[in-house]
Image (cartoon, rainbow, N blue to C red; front, side, top):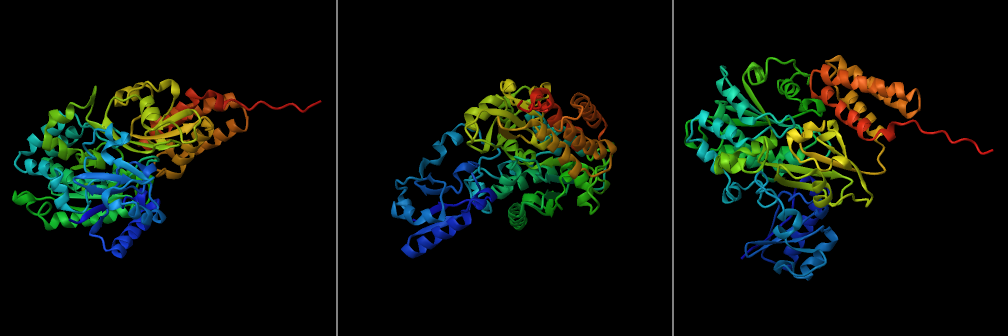
Length: 518
């Protein structure tokens, strides 16, 4: 019986040498005349163990990692084909504490299957949600999603089903589903992991959205910095089209839905839904004024659903298992699971899918293992470069949309970047303003000019120039940007700045002058 050896082709694993490892394994198999095959899977999300090599024996997966190409011959000498003991052996992968504690619904197959094998996808529960959806009325599909409590995983947290219902009810000659895969936030990689490790779940989710709203065409807008995701999604769409999942008659239902992959041009602001629509239409990526909302007049002025990758990828399990199953996870109005992306100065960085409700402290200390440097944690930025900095004093905050909002924070795309006690929060606040100034589309004055003035003001504080006056000016600039900006880029930039000023005032104090020795 042919032995299966799994080596990730996820971008994170590739950056750590997975391609060399896969080639070395293939060479050893050939040289030793072994009956084995190499399968390129996605990542399990434990990046400190990448490249993670897994061997399947009697339905169980034994892991070895992190593996380098120079380790491969030794692994085979130690009996890799039989799960032999080795310094890099991790035992059964499913039993590793980081994985065992998770509730994987959206990422149930990621790192397990061959991403481009439809047979593999179906064998692990794929397409069950879509098969159910084709037999349902559009309104019933929408109701299922509303009842599940699913909220947009792209940052805003707007109820997904409500957005779908708006598009379903909107009149229009044509309707569209647009997937926002312009994952530009620092410390986020969940969208990329899904597209590279389980692309069919996104295709299935988009097809269900099309059936639910009457949309017949979909687009996945992927940032140009994700070449591997673009390639994998493009191939997966071709496979889905050839097998009747996409096309003029989804699963022979007579209902049409097809989709295309489009590549962005490297602008952070195109992560904002209306700027993304402009880019899709071949226009400059600038933010549109609202109203009208995209649900009424979106792509090519037609009713359009715009959802994040994780939002759409969460839909198949809801249609398969039912709204109540999904709603049973989570807390308050934050239902289901959330893929936490743990990054920065952290011991165990990676993706951890769990139900809403864990405390920020448990995520950082118990799951992330604290800082990689071994120094105390000073701050955690949650929600990307526009997210607030939370100090240790707020570590009891549960991971929940409303709980974070009550502490002047954002969950955003659920990216967490961890900093130790050497971080200078004034410099971090300045970076937020500089980031906004660089990435602004320039359409509105508060964002375009406010961010530039913010950088200048932060520099004056750092130089000890009228520090109290300039701290007040920086706070005033933040207030103007928050309430006067056209979109979230300018509107959310104040979150990191104000939180840094509020929780770490000592970093904004003037540096005392050292008097010359007498």
